[in-house]
Image (cartoon, rainbow, N blue to C red; front, side):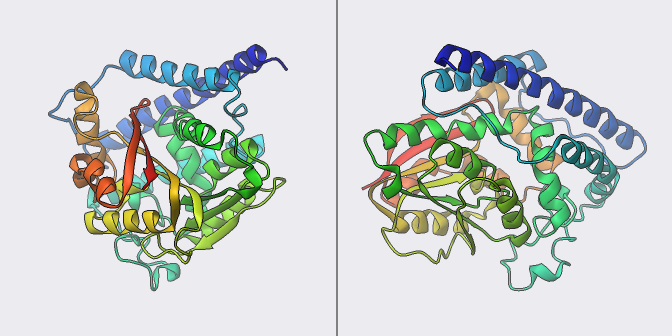
Length: 348
């Protein structure tokens, strides 16, 4: 397939994918409104400005076009981010809608305790053993791992995968002239392995590792990598990685830092700097912060009100640049693709 055809196929596939998740998003929003009218939970109205739906869709279209252009330019292959079959995917969608009343009942009661009651919570950090997003079981059950990606993609109208893929471009720049067999990449808080799958498709011979605290999510990551060369999956906290100093060439962190307390955020940053080799690459992708897109600040304000995100408000105003600089991670690039913030740093 020519590069132009690959770009067109990528754009067409992403457009269909957007249409599906946009429809799910609207259906979920309708169901949420129905639950609110039934008294499950009131809707939060932000004080700050929020973009119109047209602005959001225009920005998302720009994200999808940028991704297609990167495919055309050979930076990475077309998107294939789900190892599940169509029947399996539809089953997850049905389960997501079935679980919604329970999640919204917990939201009304401000109850984020189902994760802490799981046997798997024993010995885990307190900040982790809670129901992020009010999802049943937090990050500690098989059902949560099954539903997480369809929930996130529905929330972001199919943009979660394309936002993650923006982290592939700086990796491609770093890999120019390098033998991928000699490069080791660590994805910190790899979750269900969606990003690891994208990296594996782009770099079949690269040595990959994923680190996460949740065994069910690591099990889901194994399923996502099924049929591909595997990755080393490590069950451990990001603030105490069982890896040697200067042992990794590339570290990625995808939507982790907004779920960490401020002091843990700094400990994790120090660990990332420790395990990176001198000259190594750190690729950070997370939520927008306040002021990144001033006309969108209301979205950032509303997010922790709609979902259980206890550390998000501090993240939204945290000095990430200063934190990375103190750790010895020098700035190379900062951009804001759609609802995310991409920061590329090098280890001094």
